[in-house]
Length: 455
Image (cartoon, rainbow, N blue to C red; front, side, top):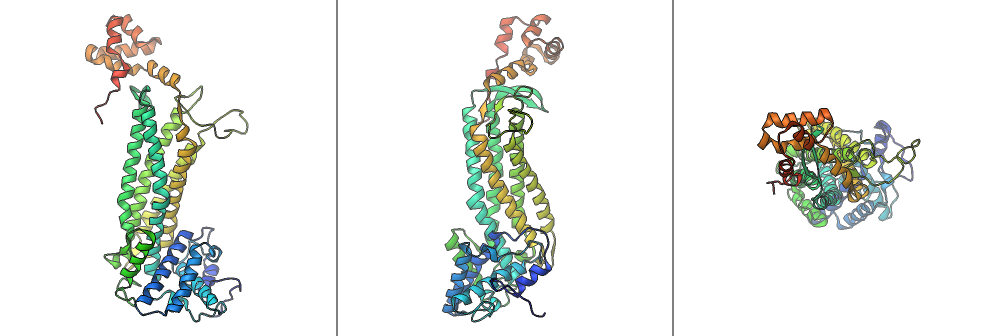
């Protein structure tokens, strides 16, 4: 294909340089999490090939050292390729192969670009294809991101919700359905619902994780395992398991592992479920904190920063806004992943970089936003007890407690009278002559109305 000029300071080679030329699309670079996962695969593959007698131990040692330097973050600038490249991720796989080979040759005392004694294809990519290493890297990167970043952030968020549910258990407030007044509940019960919603999402995430442990490694180009040692996949997965503490194993069917991405789509769906719950929780807090004078005013959010460049003293629900924007982005990422995952043709899905980029972005955004919201809003959220009590006592829907003694029609007449005459329910009952004041007080007791049979 002709001579390609590569800068002397670059560790990459001709294939990476060609990709820089032909795929100068957008500004989104291949996530370093994918690069690091590929480096882990190359290191484990080299060690395995030594064990299998297919690679000289001295060459493998140089490759091991080069891959370790990548994982230490020393060569991040050597991975400049965009997400928008070949759909198999071949250019990024070769980018890693070339950097490891060039750096390994340097460690062996040779100049860059010589491809000797270590060749990027013959040695670094031995027993592999981009078609099986790249989807394996996608699974490894996603699994690590979920375990190391997302699950801890969600656990912190859920713990705060549980704490608030207990702390607010005594605070009776007006319920709302259709954004209209409803019968009362406690603020603690409301927050217990938030915690339960988030728990459903966490459980869905946990159910999706095992699918990530199945790796396409060993499938090579089309799933037949051509040019890979029969023991290669199992031994590499065992090394990754020992290194990372996660039970990676060869996929049961390599043809499916190369052609489809059901595991990542299931993961994306669980992220969408989490985003859906977080959107609802954040919006409820936004409503309850609205005001402080002309809104609901039932919660006070932390005053983190000025809310307006023109209105002094204004405080806005900025953490809510950030979290809900992240949720919308995750909804969009999930739609893109679903479409991309459906586009496998025969033996290969060729939307892998897009899926990798979107799934990792969703994981990172969700973890960061959950952590930020928990730290800068949720943990310092305060109830405005006076306003909670005022809104609850002013609610006409306390009339529901009168239905057993008055019947639906007469109870409705009480509510209508109170609303039309701008008076309390007690005043309306007395005006209509339905009950004595003592009977009303005995029947309408908000504290007894919030008792739940749900444990």
